[in-house]
Image (cartoon, rainbow, N blue to C red):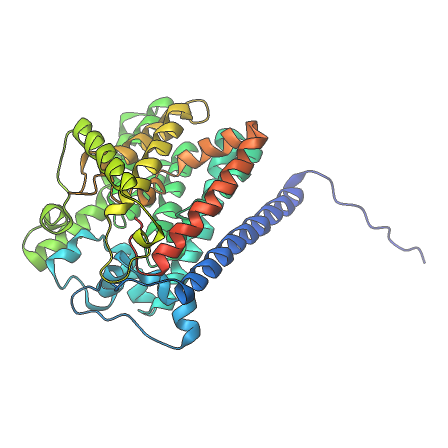
Length: 403
């Protein structure tokens, strides 16, 4: 009786594509896991050994407390705005100040279990999804090699610890990058839905209408296709309804910016002058690490120094970005950087600039392409990111202000 000889699978086709997809997904998960482990290790060591400031709490919310490992591994990642998001997840919009924080992230935390562990797990999973989606987008824009460098640059960016904190940055990354990817592929219905959901997590979601419109124009889509753009601000509209029912003011998220958070519309040249001046003043007066890891009430004025550096880095990526990005993605990145530039905070003009840079995810495609063409750039970037990142992670973990 003859035995059947197995026929080898062809090199091409769906099978090889599935194998390659699985390999890339595994590598991306490993990359995300290694970067998160490094962040947790640095943060835990800093929390144990470095001086801590007093935590800035929110009305009616007390941070969860636990044993040694809880305090080392989980507690450091819910500071500052994280307290607000956890408070909203538990109590809703109980005070006017909370209206500055968009509802999608705390709503998901509330639905999934309303705890710090749930919030951090949600952020970490969202970051893994966002890194995978950004890889797909970067591969179509600049090639697979540049895409790998883009994900590496994002995972080890000095403030990428926000992707594992009780903040919505990872959720915004996953949703906005997904919307941009769908728009680039001409699937505008999916892109509009993702943009709509993004706008419930961040005001930057509304800006996704611009690259969508540009992609439609490039594809010569009929006028009826542009009706999808009306769905983009749906998340903000739902939030405004909630604010009206709660505070009788649908624009409360904007009304609280100046009285509670010090932000108001300012001409860009004024913002630039104030930002450079404040950075120079605090850099000149810096004498020792005690300025950074001060005891007592934490301050945010020293952040003027790195705020201007990160903003300048974002501008540099924009300047060289047209070589690596299509117009829709470049315009979106430009708008993301423009919004905080037009709404500076009193005393800290570029407040949260490092964190806002994370929302301009296409800029990491630019960074990936730039690194790909210059092998020396990866060594410099990684060395600088690890050093600066260790400092900023340590500050954040010990209740000091970063961004």
